[in-house]
Image 1 (tube, rainbow, N blue to C red):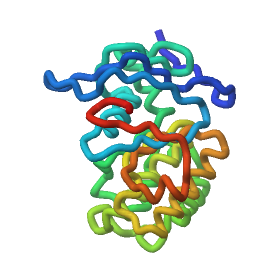
Image 2: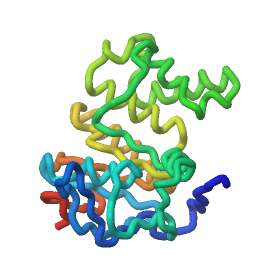
Image 3: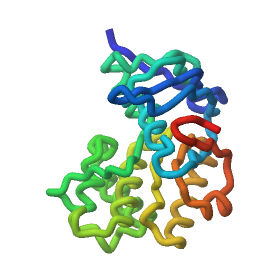
Length: 228
């Protein structure tokens, strides 16, 4: 049987609902008694010190961690134990972690072009879309460089651009501005807000207080694996 995650993106509803959720890793409980809801189309920050559990919570929301408790996605219990379900879920819910993954044998422009979304397009359309993402994230001058030849900030922007090529309706972002200067951080946040205005749900982990001031949205603060 084909497992399909049916999603009606523009109908306002609770996109994530967790109740009494716990995550244990190597016998240590890393997330404790999590209960919260996130609406479709929200922009939510995850805040807290390093080690508070922000990255673990994003991984949980991406279906990467085993858990106990209730986890409801678009009003239905998740079924991550079913491979087809999880695969389709993760196509719709894009996660950009701090562990950036690129094909080191391919250039910046090739890493963008090989994403599945582009494979289904005509070659000229691929080139147009790649050029658009390179321009948006100020990477055009690095198009022929390899990932290990560019800075950490450039890599962060490339990873975000690659995630956005698939036109996700939900973005999970782990410290996407950590390696960026203030001007580029503001540019990235401005673009993310424009996506959010179009209905994209964004959950962004950060410890940068300046972002919270300049681009205010609802915050979920974590402390030692708990929401406070």
